[in-house]
Each structure stands twice: as structure tokens, then as C-alpha cells.
Image 1 (cartoon, rainbow, N blue to C red):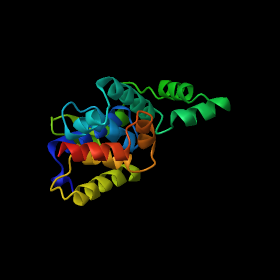
Image 2 (image 1 turned 60 degrees about the horizontal axis):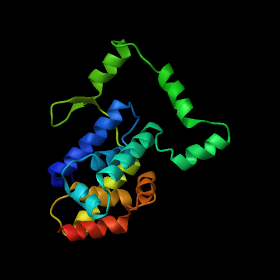
Image 3 (image 1 turned 90 degrees about the vertical axis):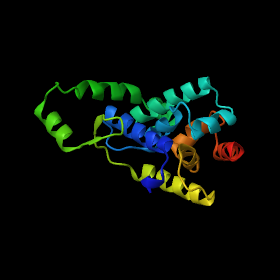
Length: 193
């Protein structure tokens, strides 16, 4: 399937892997993939977002919300608020966990893990290998189906964006708060062609 990915789609996937590796995520999730799409500068997905009314300011707010979702492993603001009412502050718990997890540089297990589980991306950067969640794999499969449905010979990051919005995940919910929905983006992609 990856041989059909355009440069923009590959960049989105690599950026998702990079975000996941940087925050030591257990797996690459759909919110990492969304960050890979939203942080692009000139791509089919960005054009579709702009046609859908997502200004640079909206994209910046969306990026901040997606980073928070990544940090919280997909726990939405609504879920965090509900937990706060029960006396559990998710961000405070995460701050404490991050503080406890500080590992001295050069710690042998870290070097061993990085040596055993790493991969090189197109710009030459070496990243720890992070497996893909079933949900993120499903997004990539839906992107393929979207391309096939549109009779496109390739998969670009616009297909990935539509696939992220075609469901009820945390990314679709987050983007919907900014009026970025499956229908609106699909229509914007059709206008672009």
C-alpha cells in the first residue's frame, strides 16, 4: 500500500512516527497521524482545510489540541473534565509520571532499546521504532479505500485527512469542534480537483 503514497502522504506518516517517538508513545495513534497531516505547509490536505475554512489560526489551535491529545493518549477534554469532577486531574497525573520517568542520559537500557528498535526516515533521522495502533492502521486502510472510491492512482494526505474524519474517533471529534467534518473536507477535496 505504501508504494501508492505520495510524498505528502509519506511525510505525514513519517511525521506521525516522529511525534510518537519523541513523546515515547507506546504506539502511533490516529492523533499522531492527524498531527502529521495538520502540520504540513503545502499539500492537498492543507488546501482542503483552507477550502473548508480552516485558517492558519484554526490550524494552530487544532495542532495544540492534537498535541494535548497525544500527551493524554487520546483522552479528550470532555473525558479529562469528567475525571476532574471525580478528583482526578489527568494533566497533573501525567506531569508526575513524566517527572518519575526521567531516565539519566546514557542509561544502558535506553541505549539498548534505541539500538534494537530504530528506523531511519527519509531525511536521515534515526527514530526509535514505534508500532502502529489498530486504529491508526484502520485510518490508513480507509485512506486507501477513499483513493479507490475516487479512482485515484495514488494516496495523498488529503485521503488520509478524509479517513481521519470518517469515523467517531477523538480526531474527528476534535476537528468537528472547528467545523472540520468528513462532509466538508470531502467536498473541499472534490472542489480542488
